[in-house]
Amino acid sequence: MTLRVAVIGARGRIGSEAVKAVEAAPDLELVATLGRDSELSELADAGVQVVVELTHPDSVMGNLEYCLHNGIHVVTGTTGWTDERLATVRGWLAESPRTGLLIAPNFSIGAVLGMQFAQVAAKYFESVEVVELHHDRKADAPSGTATRTAQLIAAARTKAGRGPQQDPTTHGLEGARGADVDGVPVHAVRLRGLLAHQEVLFGDTGETLTIRHDSLHHSCFMPGILLGVRKVVDHPGLTFGLEHFLDL
Ligand SMILES: NC(=O)C1=CN([C@@H]2O[C@H](COP(=O)(O)OP(=O)(O)OC[C@H]3O[C@@H](n4cnc5c(N)ncnc54)[C@H](OP(=O)(O)O)[C@@H]3O)[C@@H](O)[C@H]2O)C=CC1
Ligand SMILES: O=C(O)C1=N[C@H](C(=O)O)C[C@H](O)C1
Image 1: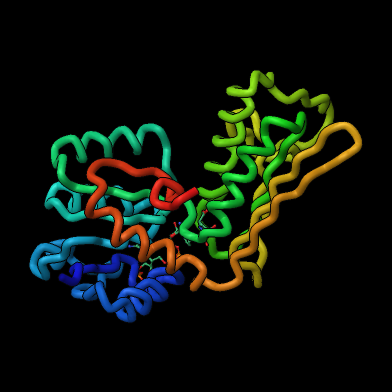
Image 2: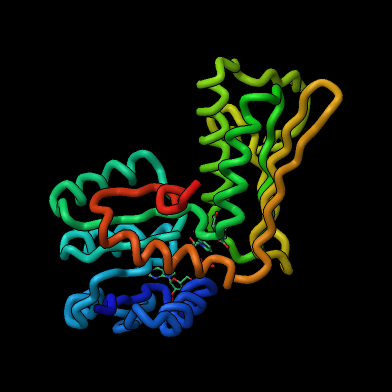
């Protein structure tokens, strides 16, 4: 049995690549492609089972509300997640208990592994900062991946009994030390020519460790998206992070 799949954001940078990937997958059938001006009712009309949602923080909530209320499973990589937004989608899922939602801050296997490795290193290094670098059309900063990475590092530090990092800065310009995500400084670079890159910098007495990941083409996100589509139908409720569908 093939799964009936739709892509929302089908003309976008990652959405257009997802359309090609779903079309090429023998066990998936692409039955709808939606853009900014499409009617969400097209999804129900086409009998869509799984939506791949790759749009914008301004539109993701409306798309998810429609899908979850209609029992359509969703795999989304759209950014802009806050605790408040997550609580809202949990409420929608509670009303549709057989429906699955995967929110993946990053679909690339290398990026997911980088986050895992960073959690391990976080226990052993006193200093840590995250630098993310993206293309110059990105709507959000810091990136969803960098935010999640910093949250995971902060949790690992707390679990290891590490206190907050000390920052001796008393003089300087606003913003020079980056955004504070759970006590981890996160710096965002936007540069034409880049796609998506991240360095997690660790330091302690006499040594540093850098965990770097580079996405060089949007094709790197496709194995993760396809895995998410195949798995989400058997995972009702919210799954946050592709790592939960990997054998790590
Ligand atoms: N998790 C991951 O691994 C990845 C996540 N992303 C995230 O995916 C999202 C999309 O990225 P990207 O493809 O670069 O963005 P693009 O701007 O290239 O594409 C977004 C698409 O979404 C649609 N869209 C934009 N705004 C709205 C809106 N307000 N309402 C409805 N539809 C809208 C547009 O449709 P139209 O063309 O019809 O205007 C557009 O085609 C971002 O949040 C990005 O951070 C990106 C790469 C990897
Ligand atoms: O906008 C992008 O391009 C990307 N967005 C995601 C993020 O914010 O982490 C994933 C990847 O970095 C590409």
